[in-house]
Length: 149
Length: 140
Image 1 (tube, each protein chain N blue to C red):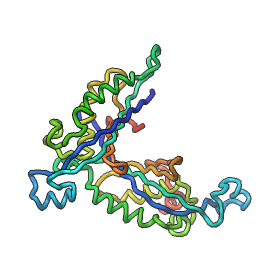
Image 2 (cartoon, one colour):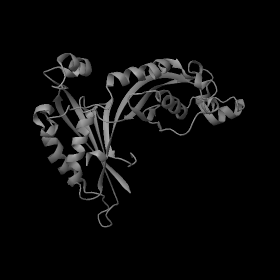
Image 3 (cartoon, chains in turn yellow, purple):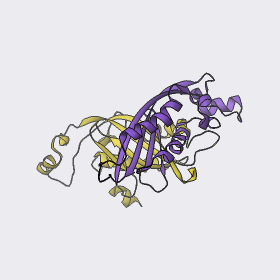
Image 4 (cartoon, rainbow over the protein chains, first blue to last red):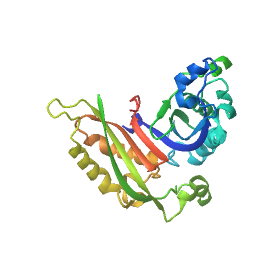
C-alpha cells in the first residue's frame, strides 16, 4: 500500500534582497502605471522565503530522501549566496533582461536547482512578503533561457 | 471536490541511529541528530481530507470526528513520547520526518470513512517538513 505513496521533503530558506520592477520595453509613464511604487528607481527590498520541495525514494538506511546537509549546502551555494543581500536587478544575471518579479524569481530558482543530483526538485514556492506567495513547478522558461537552448 | 485541512501539534523526542552502521558512520550521516540521549521537536501536523460536501450537513467530514481520529491515532500515540522507543510503528525505522509522515498516513487512511485522505504534512520545525500523498494526486 505504501508503495503507492509519494513523499516530499520541504525546506524553507531565507534571503533578503532588493529589486525594482521596470521594463525597458515600456515608457516611463507605462512603467509607473504598471508597476506603481515597485517602479521606484532606487528599488526596494523584501525578506524572501524560498520553500523548496524535493522528492525521491526514502533510503531505508537513513530514513531520508536526501541528507539535509547536502540539500542545504547546495541551496546555500546556488541560491542563498547568489541572492541574499543582493540587488536582484544588478547582481543576478537572469534579471538583466527580465523583470525580477517573484514569478520570475521562482522560475530562476527552480532552474538553478535542476542541477541537484541527489533528489528531484519538484517545485519552488516563494513568499515575497507574508501576504504574497508564488509557486513554480517547471514548464515555462524565461525568455533568455529559451534563447539559450 | 473540496479539501479540508485540520492542524494539530504534538511534542516528541527522537534520535537518528542505524545499528547496522558504525558509530563513526552514524555520526557522519546524522550529525547532531545522532546524540544518544535524543532531542525533541514541536511537531505540527496538517491533515487534508478531500471529498464532496454532504448535501444535508454541508460537510465533507464532521470536524469533530476528524478531531477524535487525530486524538486517538496521533496525539495519544506520539505526544510527549520518545518516538524511537514508544511508537511501535517506528521501532525499526529512523524517525525522520519522511518516515513519520508515512506512518501517520498509514494510521489515518483506514480511519477516514467520509471523503478520503488527500495529504498529510508534518512540520518538524517551521523550516522543515515532509508531506505524503498518493502518487498522481495533485498536492493541493
